Amino acid sequence: IEDLERSIEICPTFAFAHLHLGTVLASKHRSREGVEHLLTALRLGLDSSGLRRHLASAYYDLGEPDLAEQECKMALQLDPKCTQACYLLGVIAVKRGRLDEAIEHWNRTSALDPELKEVHEGLATVHACKGDYAEAWREVYRFIARGGRPAREFIAALSACMPDPGGNH
Image 1 (cartoon, rainbow, N blue to C red):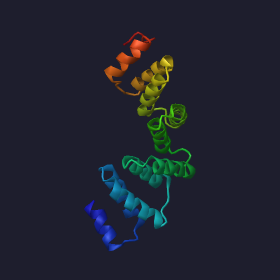
Image 2 (image 1 turned 90 degrees about the vertical axis):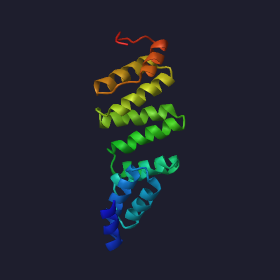
Image 3 (image 1 turned 45 degrees about the vertical axis):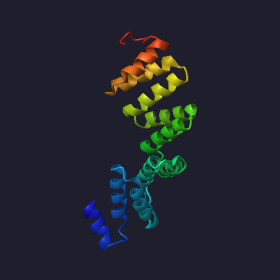
Image 4 (image 1 turned 60 degrees about the vertical axis):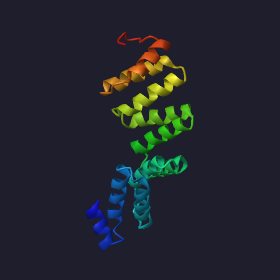
């Protein structure tokens, strides 16, 4: 962080330093400071799906889902294959109670990156909430196949609604 701050002190218009500092700060739960540097990088002419994705995550962490959603959509305009932006749109949809929309975003995320285990965990949960237990079990097995370990409480609750079709839980 100190090296990046020093670079910015020497050259305040060094957009890449603002981008990297914003990303690092946001990853260390200093999202407000991270947003400031990411927006500075944007004002300095640096625009990319990665920058927009990091900005979206920081806004989400700050409790600003509208701004996060807007940045995710910008990231996807810049790069339709931006998996992280698509995934975060699903998270935002769940937070808003829009489960069908979350499923759409996460199915798209899975198509972009079939090995992203978190998406299958989310899909299992959403399908269970909607009462589609067979699909929830399919997603549990996809999650496990990618190295995921489902919470015992989730498996117990899902099993109470529909026994494991594979007989493993």
